[in-house]
Length: 499
Image (cartoon, rainbow, N blue to C red):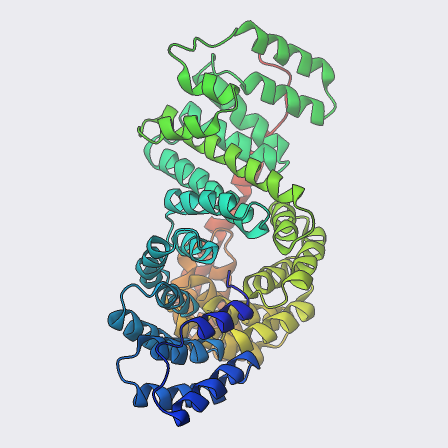
């Protein structure tokens, strides 16, 4: 979420500092401004370096040097310049803003927050500062704070798609956080089952949603709204007669007592922010349930406003995310491509496009996207991992090794990268190198496949006993996986209404 370059050039013009005292410096300053305006950032950098040496202590000139470097993509050096500028002049709002933005470019959202907060405090109506701060807070899993800034941003720029998308994303993150807290503190409670069921229904996984709604009702028969939810699943699966039964049961529960059931009444009235504020004061299962529901509803409202604004990269991004969640990968690819057409420099969209292409078995197309991403984002471990996975899928294990080794160098904790690298080493006949990676990744093995590969590696290195142990563990995992599949098949049946 970065502002357009013209704003940066305007900032350079506005913050040139006191006029240079000699004709030579005046000319040099004008040349630097012209170079910035023409996009000749390296030339501008050299000129501003000379000006900074000639005018030590001039915060505006130091800022402009940083701006030239920022514009040229040299964000680490730019961050140092902006840090110097704010020391010289702590009230220099644009320098605080660009310091925060530079740190975001360096994948340091924690280091970006304080400068961006200073920028907002100095210029409360600056939409760019709000946008960047909200983005940084989201990356740090601080969705409540992010939502406040995006909310203000929608007031400042009500027709800005970025604002509504950011607000919706913040509320979705808040909803997920409440669910995760509920799962940690009250798993298998009626409230947990109800939220899980709602999530499955939204993904059109009606059989599992049906099961979880029934579990919630078994624990809490007076749970309003769940019979209606069951009725909708019956409708979706062609059983109108059973739906009618559930609707009658919902009707029989009657209206809530609003003197005691405040969450439910406020939610029914559509005052989702009031529900969120009330629920955020408590940590019990009921409050966490309503906190998640209210935040989710607020997210939907924000996304509805995004839809009203017409075509935008963020509108297509939202559609792509929804299709990806439903595993409609071809539809997701179409939407990611439309988003990328409108925002061709957005690396995050490119990454998600690559994911969807791989999920749709279009590995060569994914590789083309990932190759470009490696060029513009060489520090992203996930890009290198996906690139290695794509090469593996294209039966090119030797090429996969280099990408996967780089992924692990940048993120040594990635078990997914270790599993893929183990496979690649095995395919190029380096079983000894494969073993430590497959052993590390095997703790995530759910179907026995990794243990099978590990057994093959042990066999090739002459360790038959260890291979036999791995094969036995593979057998156990396969049997357990098959048993779980049978249980799910039996459990997730859409049955008639309970007696």
